[in-house]
Image 1: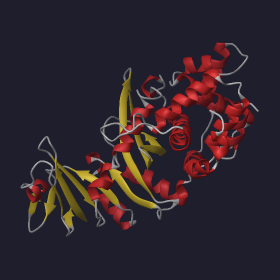
Image 2: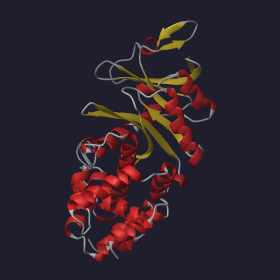
Image 3: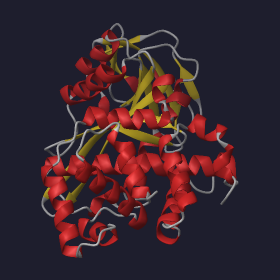
Image 4: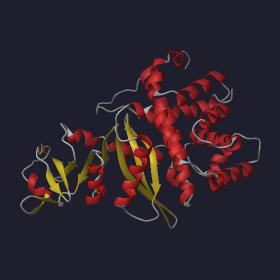
Length: 367
């Protein structure tokens, strides 16, 4: 069985595209994993086909121009690959942006925090510079809970950009916990307004304090925690629920920063895609999300079943699960593409959930 055919058949269960387009999507995924870049000209060269490179390139262009994705189906695929719906999870919300020529590329991304990297589930391409607004954030979370409910959401994690009275009030009224960093000059309302920093002005570097009574910030009562950083700045986190270790929870937000690193320079070089059309950029992100999920699962399998990664002196692994898996996938696709056993293993690693992979010892019999 060819890996391309098996992958196309697997994707068909979630993405109702015709055979030709599923084959093209599977071929692009494999090309992306071979090359670790998203430039269509280069992807066409690595695309398995007997057609000329120019014909392959035109086929990829037509795919991005003509194919319509249902992004709820893509989200369902991503969630199913990890069996997220059976467990509680934190969602990280953040934005990344860059320029291509005179065009601003601006992404708002909602991702599930998981094993060192956030896995993207929904995203918006913002047709503007700068921050998202409260309506855009609410729409993104609302779309998620329409598909997957809110019961498993342990919290929304976000940085200082994601403040706003209406947004916080909406999350609270919908019983969605949040852990969001706020600016130290933002005001808290006690008997009168005062900057947040006044509540924690006596903290020294490295010292942390959690206030056990909720404080009114804007229209929402929140629990506040603060840590004095080495720079002297205060890291203040607001949450609409009481939590034993709010700073530890907020620290998980870093995983969406790692996601953006994986999509860009440490992985797929997203900034070099040369696409500027809204719908085509959004489609490329779907391709990247699926590839990233596959690479991460392969890396997790290698670490937990085949050969554990070394833990460095700073306490972190020598490389991420994503990078570990991506290197393995690239090596297999470049040098062992005709190996039926390896192809079947890679397909199983794509299809099975991490728990199923750990229980399946057959995949570890050959390297």
